[in-house]
Amino acid sequence: MKMKVNVDALRELIKQKFNQSVPQAAEAFGIDYSYLFRVLSGEKDGGPKLFGGLFNYCNNNNLNFNDYIFLNQPLNNGKTKLKSSTGVQSKIEVEE
Image (cartoon, rainbow, N blue to C red):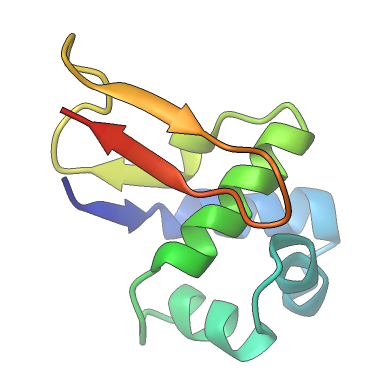
């Protein structure tokens, strides 16, 4: 399963919640500003650090993480379970 960032939705989140401040959003997601900037400009794809930080931010702020990603297949196809762990660095595990 391949995840991609929904850049338009992420930009809207940054506009609404961080007053268009990419550095503030990066801090909230626990990633470097330059990395987030490169993702938003299309120079980089999102990776585990971004997805983990965004996942934690969404959980802590009652937002739907799925609104900010694209999947090449549905996250839950009846056989797939999404598990998350809490803590400083949550990770997303998909079991099939």
